[in-house]
Image (cartoon, rainbow, N blue to C red; front, side, top):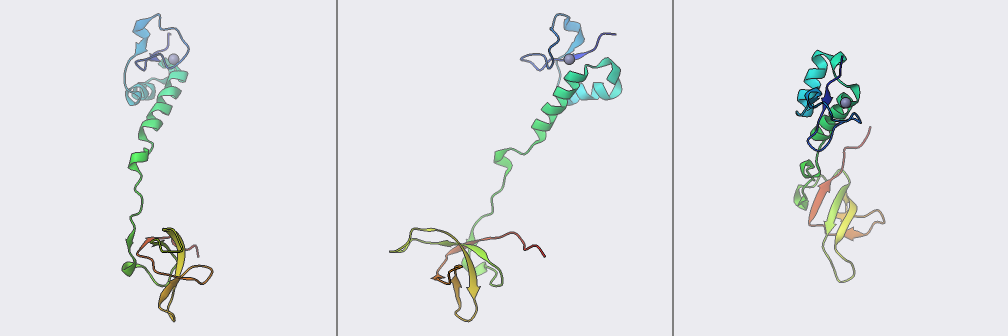
Length: 130
Ligand SMILES: [Zn+2]
């Protein structure tokens, strides 16, 4: 029995020439896979594979879906953990992000070299692995 192939709108999903229009489905990848689930022996496996890949690409996260953490005021920063602190430009330094920890005794933020900074905002770091 002739197999049904998947036509994506621009070309066929497999290398079979589209000479027999009746054997091609021009439908969404999920609809094509529904046909494959019902009668896999009647569906071209290369086309089913292409439909599966197309479906996975559709559901993959897009760059616009990614949510970046927003900087928060330094007053909300946890003082028992390291933070990524935003340090505004000074006469000596350009503005930038610096890994900082809070010195309770000095009541100020220090970098790894022990230099004090006055960050205005922070980004929480991932939880520490125990
Ligand atoms: Zn095919």
